[in-house]
Length: 144
Image (cartoon, rainbow, N blue to C red; front, side, top):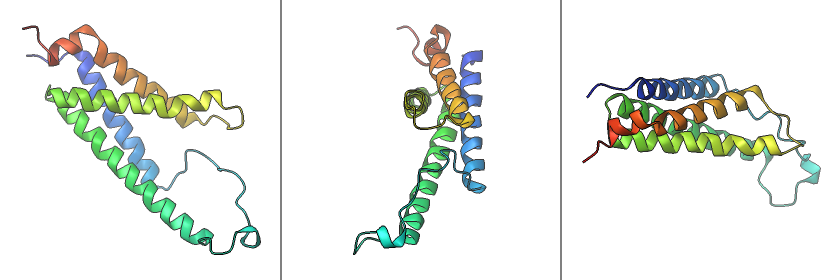
């Protein structure tokens, strides 16, 4: 079966998400901005880990999460490109995660909205909508 244009566009969008995650990770860009004022060493409770320790752990977790998202996005794009059902589901779930992760920012008044939030939300919505179009679904789930 020939791949519908909607599926190709969704696969390319997932590759764009992966490239964006790779650039953010490699150049150590924090899309969330400053999380707020950090307490000084004098204000830290006794026995609490040092700020450097917390920062190191947070950086490791962040890079690991970015690598996992990068791999999942590329895997989903490959699955969509080859018209595999698992590619549809991984792509759909990743699109939903992008939408659900970035949507709450628009309802929180205290946090300034970053331009990257708009991009991630838009790409997530594009992927979900494109995969829900009838031609896209027919490519993965033919009528029996």
